[in-house]
Length: 399
Image (cartoon, rainbow, N blue to C red; front, side, top):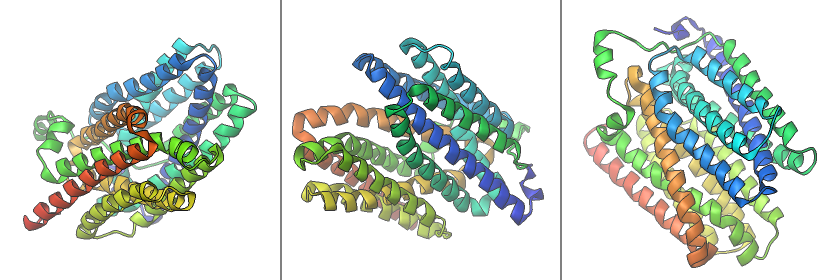
C-alpha cells in the first residue's frame, strides 16, 4: 500500500516533477565534481586518476546488491532522502581535507550511495505515476538526467579551468542535499510488503529472477552488449576525431554534444510509446538503429557523418535505457523489484568494466576506426539477441 492511490492527477504530476528535477540537478552536480576531481588528480599522476575510476567502479559493484536489499526492505522515500543526504555530506567533507587516498574512499562511498539512489528511484517511479503510466515517469526522469548531465559537462569544464575542484565539490554536495530536500516534499512512497508469502518469494535475488524470465534475461543480455559497444565507441571517439579526422578537441566536445542532444530526443519521445507490443518493437529498432549509428563514422570518417551518427546513437541509446526500466517494472512483482533493478544496474556496471578494459586495448591494437568497428559488431550482436528474443516472445503470445 502506498500513497500513490491518494494522489490526484495533478499531485502525481507535481511529485514526478519534483523527482525529475532533483535527478537533473543531482546529475549536473555529479558531472561537475567528476570533471573537477579528474582534473585535480591528473596533476598528481596517472595512477591517481586510475584509482579514481577503480574506486567509482568498486562502489557501484558493492553498492548494487546492497541497494536492492535495502529498497525491498525499507520505505523507499526516506531511504532515498537519507542516501542523498549522506552523498552530499561525503562530498562536502572533501572540502575540509583533500588527498588522493581520501578521495578514492569518498568516491567509492558516494558510488554506493548512488546505487541506493538509482535503485530506489527506479522502484519508486511506478508508485508516483501509477503502474500503467510508468513510461511517462521513466521518460521524464531520463530527460532530466540528460539535461543535467549536459549542463554539468559544460559547467564542470569551466570550473575546472578557472576556480578549481573546491567549487565543483561544493556544487555537487549542495545539489545532493537539494535533491534530498525535494524528495522530502513528495507524498508518494513505496512500502515493501512483508507478509509470509512475499517474505518467501522475496528471498530470491534479482539476478535469479532475471535469469528465470526470458523477457528480462534476453533484453538485459542485449543491453549488456549495448553498453559494452557504447563504452568502446566513446573511448575510441576522441582518437578518431584527432588522429583520423585530424580535428581538434573542440570537435570532440561537439560530437559529445550531438550524442547528448540525441539522448534528450530519445528520452522525450519514449513516453509516446504506450502499447506493450510497440515498446517491444521499439527496443529492437532502437538497438538496430544504434548499430547503424556507430557504423556511420567507421564507413564515412568525416565530421558531418560522425555528428549525424552520434546524434542518432544518443537517441537510440536513450530509448533503450528508458525501455529497459519499463520492462523491468512490467515483469517484476513489486515486493522484490528493488533487487531486480539493482541486478539490471549490475549488468550495466559489468558491461562498463568490460567495455573500458577492451576499449583501450582495441584502440592500441587496431586503431580508433577499428575499435569503432568492433563496437559496431558488439552492438550488432545486441540487435540479433533483441530481435531473436522478440520473435520467440511474440510467438509465445507475450511481450
